[in-house]
Image 1 (tube, rainbow, N blue to C red):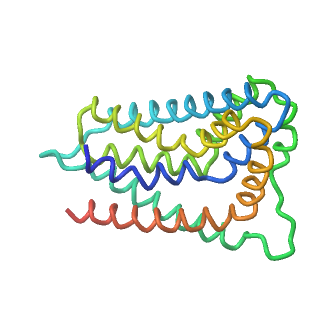
Image 2 (tube, rainbow, N blue to C red):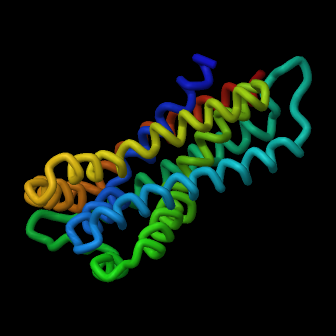
Length: 225
């Protein structure tokens, strides 16, 4: 189990500190429905990650594994492809980073967050955790790492639950700050939002570069056995 947790940690941390989901939950917290919407967003976030995991492990369970307990070759291929994709996204993120003096643009849908109902907030959590391509790649990478370890179903479930908990820290932290500090947290959360929005491209570039290189190494190692 220790080896499995070590394999999923980079991807889980990558999901946890992905800037835009954190920016989204911060924007919800400063609205009139902040308390309810913040909790609804977290619920949707966890549900989204759980759904992705359920689908991935269901697919993986129907694919024949390799003999003698070794990771199946298909799992190594998936990991290798994911690594290459992450490197390509890292390059795109770096090229699209904001330059000094330029205004940072956030997605247009974020402008409507102050009008979101709790149901829409929960839906945003599902979308940003399970549908957002950047997060989805990291979640798939984490699930693939668990499958490659060839552990029991029970251990896979435990490992993925831990993955979800770690991946949720980033969006939970602003909510905890808001509940602990109340209106006093607005200035702090606003500074956090602006900093994350400005450094989003650089943060994701570094994350995808590190995790991408690691996955490529793991994939090549698995295929060479």
